[in-house]
Image (tube, rainbow, N blue to C red; front, side, top):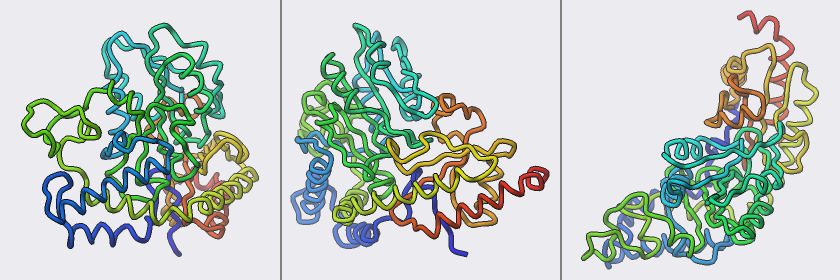
Length: 387
């Protein structure tokens, strides 16, 4: 039986078909370090990085390519902004479905007032609940665009308009929406948009980007300091963008792979997005007919991405996920998904859920096979529960 991969919210698989060959080409035929020489290979690497910045800014509606900063991933990017912008005495608003990539850095601050804006049990949020919690010293609102647990979208454009009217900075974590939805940083009203390469954009792990407003970027302190290949006469970190935030050697194979993935995805993204949502609807409809199964988040397709979490009352969710993998070769993710706050909101803490996340290359046959496997597991629940 062929494996069925439904863990795309963790990382997409397969990757863009052109990715591996382009990363290999860099490693075997280019090899130069961007910004570290004027010879052909170094120039090739520098220009590839510049092209990637420009493509990302075009794709995500961020006008200043110099304020597109490469990071080792979305977690790193969120830390960059949180630790570089937030100060003691600040008030920060987050949603009650945030990932630990946001909550752990914030909980590590001393003297920062962190407040969760409650979401409903389906993961939805009201912008009025954000507005009512703004204080005179609120400095930042940080929200995920879509929950990595239940796939529910948050009203980021409305939150962005609110933040702009109150002169409060907004950071949006687009880990679950980049590649799945059209995103436009400036229309969203986000001062910083954080994206990973390796999920909906079909790129490699270990690289991502923060797209910032250039004025906002001047207010953010660098997370690390070191060599940048520029202004080497200084022993202080350069303030030029993007060098201010890119100390050390960049993940250049990742840059080549990320650009290859974007080039592959560009003409196909809309079709992939439409089909993944169609398959999500098929999964939701089929799961709603299963006994002893609770679907988290929104029951329909409106206001969500193709991430579906299920709870199986009376069964051990971990055993359900294990049986899916062992007996049916279906890869899912079980547990708290690095988002305990989300599970508390969704009433699934501490047991967590089994998460099914659909990607660009899943098929209708795979979704139907998954539903058949779940039907077998939940209808054999008495026997299974005794194993």
